[in-house]
Amino acid sequence: MIPAHELLSRIRWDREFGQGWFEIGYFDRREDALQWVAFQQVVFPADNRQVFEVTDDSGRVRRIPFHRVREVMRDGQVIWQRPAPDTGPGG
Image (cartoon, rainbow, N blue to C red; front, side):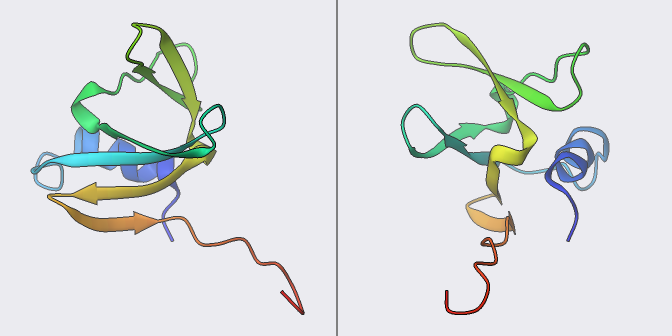
């Protein structure tokens, strides 16, 4: 499976692939829940290539590490999903 950062880069730079409405679902540790943000609202800071930035409802800019991305949707369809962690024998 393609890593999340590579998929997001492809959405940014591949004009044909990047057509459509994209949303990123990431795990928010403070909310302990999946949060969704439109790709168009995401900023990729030049000083750190391991995160993206979102602005929350209070206007605060938050940096989200790529490892917290859980799903990516295009036009309402899931196109990428992080596999569930392997819990090993017995669950």
